[in-house]
Image 1 (cartoon, rainbow, N blue to C red):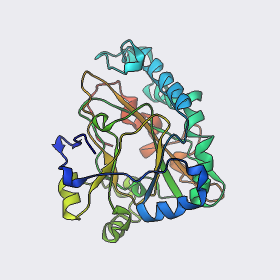
Image 2: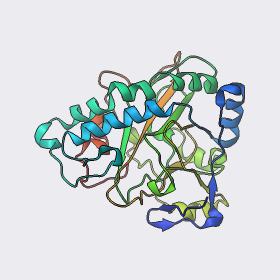
Image 3: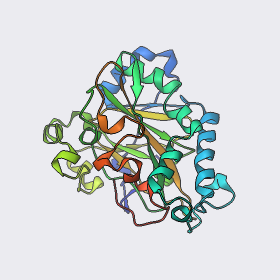
Length: 301
C-alpha cells in the first residue's frame, strides 16, 4: 500500500497495513471461492459486477440526493453542498430513504445478476438477498468502527454472507472497507459474541477498542485495498471489519452499500425481510444514518 490509511483519525503504521488478497476473474475458478473464504474470511473480486452498471446505480443515488439539495453540481464529484431540503420535501424520512435504497438501478446491482451467482458459488446452493439494503453516505472524517456482522442478523440462516459494494472508485483516501487479518480465526472473540443479539441484549455491536492498537495486540495487520466501481468483497459473519476514514477533502462523499445473501432454502432473520423490513427496533430504513439529512449529527452504526 502506497497511501497512508487513517482509522478514527489515527494513521495506520506501514508495518500494520496490508493489502487484501484478490481474485481477478472469479468465473474461471468458481470452485476455489469457498476455500478462499474459509482461509481469509473474505473474497475480493475485481470487476465482478460491471463498472457501467455500478456507475449507473451511483448516479441514481446522487440524483436523488441532489433533488433534496444535498449534493452539488457536478454530480459525478459527489460533493456535499452543506445544505438540505430533505426534511422539508420529505417529512417521512424513513420513506424517502427506503425509496433511495430500493431504486431499480441500485437493486439491479445488489439484488440480482452477478451477486446471485457469486453467493451461490460461495454457499453451495441457490441463494436469496435480504430485502433490506444498507446504503452508506460517508462524509469527510467519518468511518465505521470494527464489528462482527453476526450480532446484527443472527436470527435466521447461519449460511450468510455480507457483500460490500463500492458505488464508484474508492481509493484508500476515500475510506474503503478494512478487515482485521486472520480475524475469522479469533475463536475467543467469536465465543464472546456468538449468539449476542444487539436488539435483544441491548449491547453495542461495535468494538470500543482502537483499531490500530487492537490489531497490534493480535499481531495482525489491517487489510484494505484501492477499490474500483465493479469490485465487490464478500465476507462471513465472523470476519472483523470496519472502514478507513474518508479523507478525500473538499466535501466529497464516499458511497457504498452492504447487502446480505443467504441460502434460499433456510429461514431468514425477519427483521430484514418484508415490504418494508422492520429493521432494528422497528425503525426500518429510518434507523440508518443515511436516513437523516446529509451532515446531521452522526452516530456510528
